[in-house]
Structure formats: structure tokens, C-alpha cells
Image (tube, rainbow, N blue to C red; front, side, top):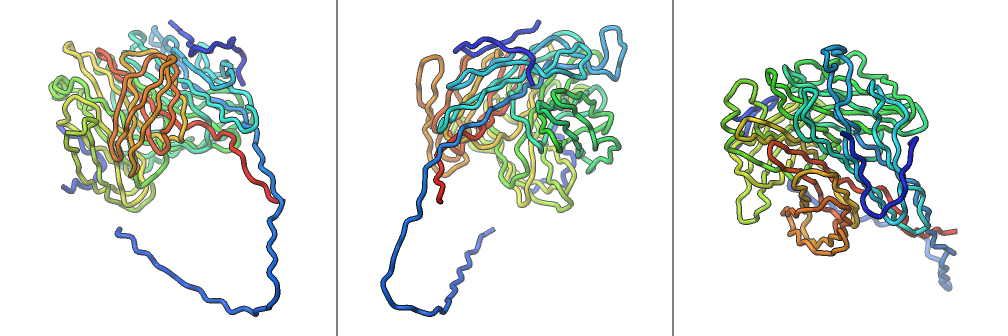
Amino acid sequence: MPDETSGPSRAPRRFTGRGAVVVGVRGLIGIIGGTVAATAVVAATVITGPIHTMTPPSASIAPVPTAQERVCPGPLLRLGDDAGQGATIATSVGEADVAFESVPAEATVGRLPTTDNPSGLAPRVLVLPPGEPGGQPLLAGSQSQAVTSGGLLGLATAECTEASGDSWLVGGATDVGRTTLITISNPSSVVATVALSIFSQSGPVAAPGAEGIVVPPGSQRIISLAAFAPEIVAPVVRVESRGGQVVANLQQSIVRTLAPGGVEIIGETSGPSRNVVIPGLVVASAESVAEIQTEPGYMDVETVVRILVPGDAPTTATVTVTPERGELDPTVFDLELVGGEVGQVGLGGLDDGNYTVTVEAELPVVAGVRASTVTDDGTADFAWLGAPEALGDRALLVIAPGPSPRLHLANPTAADVTVTVESGGETRSIDVPAGRSVSTPVARADVVLTGTDGLIGNVSYTGEGELASFGVTTPGPGSTPITVYR
């Protein structure tokens, strides 16, 4: 429950603080559905006479949309302080810029009342009150933070999201020089009891204490992933909660020897599916990445796809990397995945550009993609991309500050789609061909998208030594009329 509010404004509101790696994959491999028809014949007694028909009484009811709530991840964190004390305590470094907007009503912004962060700087919470009957209100927000202090360097962005009882996080690492923190926020009024299921390149991790994590109402817990799973190169985390629903994120930072090597906030990816679509992969400075990758400690600057098939059964997956430029051919390869083990495969050799990664598997999988950028002087940053859920017909997107933000839309459907984009008082159309992806620059403003049903969206940020991304999530259910029979 927020403890502060801001006055309404129609512009977005912002709050400013000052060589291929193959892991856990059995191998690289370089249903026809049938239809069964059945007819049932039922004998009945026939009674002759007049036939009467009657339409049952009914009424069209327009439900009132419920209140909507979004929780932002909060500021970037590090373990320890400037004096080298408190090495197991996560402390914030600076504060994120938050932008949000709502349509048509005004939303308010506050903070969670409590947090494990000793500074007391808790995540922002966005609240949109219940709407009018028949309305379909929209609420969206995002945050960004560029950091050059506290042992952190890079750009991290994230969307402010709805709480849920089950989420998957693909990204991070806990090997030498890699720190990954789990943040769990409970915006509800009841206690959340959280269980973490952690998977690694070697299989499920037996982690005492990963179940029964208590997150009080209106609070944020911050936990080091290494406390449960040290020396993990390719983790995947499932977060399940009972009682209150929660918003979970990973935050990864890298230090190579004494040089900071990037930071990222990792949001949830879609749950296990046989068809996973990840748009918005930005390959930048490919030559510099390839050169520095041969130096000690820089192996993880390579672009990779990370995949987990939950359960014990193995499966085969086909990975397709498709350039947004339609005249270029996609890269396609097959993988054999071991059940319960995280597979990670390098996507080296891609030229600079924008791509969509698709994973099609015989069994449901979860997946994510990592990309990096490196400057001429060796400054590095990285981004993790998840697989957002497909959008509905209408969506609201808010762009937090950052370098060269770009909206990427993938169309996995069989029909061409034309999307209407409204931003800054201007309206334009974007054609998204069937089975293809497109992208367009977006200003630091709110963007209303119409005609996006079935599309999948991601936002990328690219600058000198900066790379970040967040997925565009589908809005909460609106209020459309329903027919009630009496």
C-alpha cells in the first residue's frame, strides 16, 4: 500500500534520484497432428405435436473494472558499503527514474512501506482506482537507472508489473565476480509465503531455506541467489507464493577483477511453452565483443540463449534467430535438452542489428537471451531479455529515460497486422507482417498501441557502453459487457 501520492498530470510522471559457450545441452543437431472424428447416434422416443421455442430472459451487464496496481523493482543494489563492511547486506546505489501513465483515469504513485534495503528506499507502487462500468482502463510504468559508482557500471531498465503467484526468472549467475540478487515485493495486505525453485546447468538445486520465505504485507525482501546456489553459471528461478501475490526480479552485476562489467534488472519471462518468442535482441559492437571475449573473465559477453525444460523428460528444441531486416536469412539450429538442466548456447557470429529469437520445443520450456556491448576502451554492459506474454488488442507503454529507446514487435501469427501508435499527440501506423518482426524509435513519453492482438513486444535501450531492455506486458483485464441469463 503506497504511503505517498503525486498530483495528476497528463504527461508521463517521472521521479529522479541522483567462442560459443555450450552449457547443460546434450547436443547440437544441425507432429503431424491427426484428426479423429466420432459420430454418436442416440435413440429417443419421438412425441408428435406442436413445437414451442422460448428465449430465456437475459440482461447485458457491464462489470466495473477493478483497481490496478503495478510494482517497480526499485533502485540498483550492491552487497556491502563503501567501507567494505556488511558484505552480505544489499544496499542501494542511487535511485531509479520512474515514469508512468494511465488512461483514462489518473493513477497515484507511492512506495512500499518497508524494505530490506538499509537506506529505506523502497520500490515505487502505481495504483489506478476502479474504473467506470464498461471501461477498459490502462496503467503502465517503467524505470531506468544509469550508474557509475558503488562498484556498479551500466544501464538497467525494467517495467513496473502486476503481482502474481507464479513467475519464472531466466538470467543471472553466481560464479566468481557475478552477483545476482532476488527482490520479492508484496504489495498486498496479506502475508506472502514464497518458495524458490532453482535450476542450474547441472539440474535442480537442493537449497535449504528456499521454501517458506515470509514476505510481510507491503514489504520487499532482498536475497542473494548465492546463498542458495553458489557458483552457478546459468540459473533459472521459479518464484511461487501463497497468500499475497508478489513481484519478483533478479538483479545481476558483474565485476571482472576490479573493473565493473555491467548491471541489469531481469523481469519475469512467460511460463513454460512449446513456442517461446523473444523480440528485441540488439547486437551492438559485435567486433569488439568478439575481440574481448578471448581475454580472461570476458567469456560471458557473448550473446547466448538460455533454455530450461522443467521436469525430468528430455526434449528437442529448435532455435531460430531472425533479423528484423526481412531480406536477411534467419539462423536455425536444433538442441537436445536434458530435463531439469539449464541449457545455454552461444549465438556468436551475428552481425550488428536487431533480431527475434524463437524457441520451438516438443515439451514446454522457458527461455531468455543475453546480449552485451563493449566500447573501444573495454567498457562493457549487458542486457537480459525474457519472453513477454502476447498482447491484447490495446496496450499502454511508458518509456523511462534512457539512450535511443526502441519498440520491437514480433508477429508470430499467420496474418499481417497493422498497429496504430499514438504518442505525443501524433498517430502513425506500423505494418507487422505475419511471422516477422519490426521496430521503431519511441520517444520518452507514453505510447498507446492499438491492433496489437497476438503480438509480442520488447523495448531496447542502446548507448555508448550501455545496453538494457524490458518486456511489454499485457494490461490487466478490462471490463467488457457480458450476457447474464435468468
